Image (cartoon, rainbow, N blue to C red; front, side):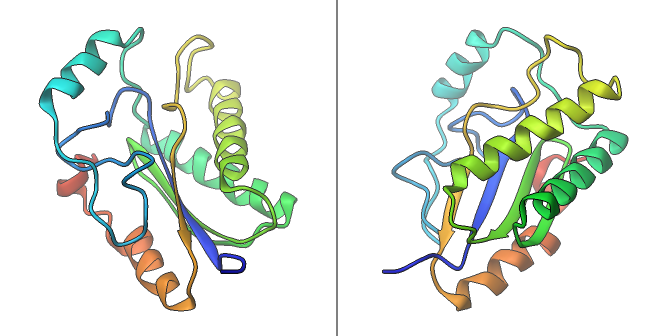
Length: 165
């Protein structure tokens, strides 16, 4: 199939968007572009909430700006083509062009550098988890998939739908 054109990367803040949430979530079997998400499961969400060891973490307006700038700077430093990024109060979306490395590495580095920036500025305590483990890494194989993915990231993040404030 060749190389993907880009990746639609999504990761959430700790405790704010659990698997089975009514807003939709992904797992290994539900992570292809333009395919159905994981089914809503209130029992699964409740079980995950009981296992949480910290309060949920939400990004303030200042924290959102820091995370966005950190991702932009890190992509520039690594030579990654950041096509679009949108940092919400409880999740991040980024579309990054194929750079010859696994999208898991991209997500991991963006999360790590963002966390470091937030802690340095006093916007996240040293022991507070900022992000959930893993993230969604949707491969965009075709050029025609880029435009709708970018439109979703840049224009489709309506505050009411995602509980963003």
